[in-house]
Image (cartoon, rainbow, N blue to C red; front, side, top):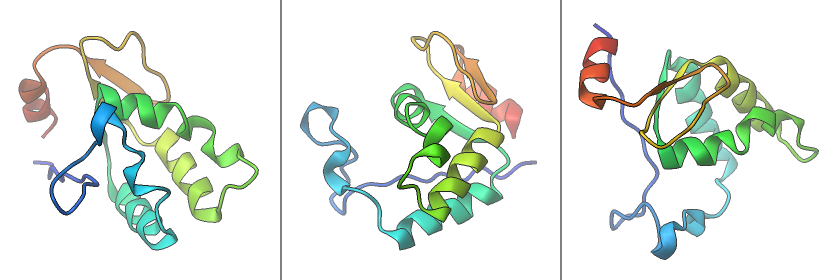
Length: 115
């Protein structure tokens, strides 16, 4: 059986988004934090996303390694992000790309199947 690991950035008081669903409260991650996420992403065989995180990630990381100011870790993260299989759970996302599959039905049933 696969292991399911849950990871998320949040403030110490438990908030993920500020008013208006703003997730820019944390600013750009430090190189240390970014490297930590990269190390964990490299160990993952599959990433699971909801609609909002999918929209945020897919708006940048498909070409994140082509940005002129991309660091070596960001380049590696972008390449790993594209290569890692992904599942998006949403009933409103139209299409997905970049090694991704869309699930519009029961998320619990699908996660159980994946495990």
